[in-house]
Image (cartoon, rainbow, N blue to C red; front, side, top):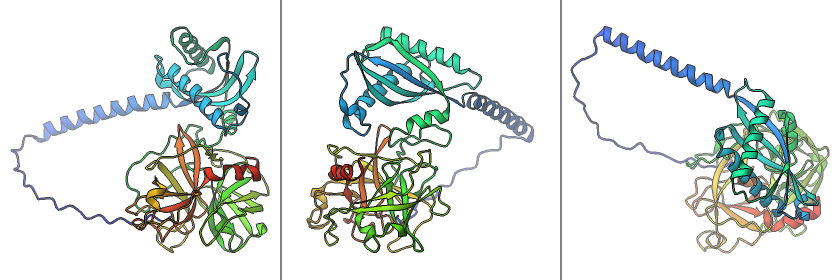
Length: 438
């Protein structure tokens, strides 16, 4: 990716000469003082280690209950729908309120709704709940504690949803089962230890981007490669078999048998490798204007979702991101204009830029159409570049990640007033669904 170097000049600070103080520490006092400090540090490390080790066990439960003041909607069965997303968020917020405000609030980590199904009296909710407790505790002990907190909350708290108390069930599950359940949801990132990966929220300037630090940090990122020629473009996994990318990636070669896709934080070696069986380019793609720069690639063999490979959520067509929304672009592209591909995945935080600003005469002079989205910084420095094409521009909504853009075009890389231009995914939501069923 292109994140052009930013030059820093060291500030000129005036030298200050400090007067030396009369020596107070004789060797004996110094030795005693050192021993005391070492003892304090030792005790502190011991206490910290004790708590870290003791509390380092994760407990997972499948929770289910009936809600009687909600009527079932058909779109609750579609996990990418706005109805499912909004209702899930309401339920997850309620769980946060129940457990985080209890006496054991710090033990609750997260919850995720897995399914909302119809019931004669309302709806049934199925969700995964994650906790951290001392490793000496048993699964059944923790279960009783959680149930106690839950039932107490139903008695004393004004909750937005009416929960049918006798319907509440809590079933202990292991990490593998928990991950399998979460695989039904898109856009969730997990570490190798099956803990949620919090949204990366650094606001520091990213000089030449940052190498992705954790395996699975951007698990939907793929590398599209021509057999014998290596990495050509990025792509995003949107289902077990479908990749979303840019149409211009296939200008040279549209033969699917010549393409492969790999996943993981490095191109070599890849974590997962698949052949491409089908390529669909938007019927109205215009290379002269970069309009409708969107394409799909179907894998010959499905991938299994894991902490390393996961699908990203497709943003609903109604989603509108205001200017200056923090978004992330990732890819294996060059870090200087016309430079080589990077073997290690890189990431950069950029900001959305309004179309009115991007279409100014001194920026892109009216070239930005409704199907395009600008992101970057008006002073340049951080941008996508050659080799990042087709890759994702994503944003975080309550730790669920959505793709809002596809790396498309731009004038050079990271120049002032020339931000990156992306295909606006929300504009093509119906087209994607018509081709893939996703």
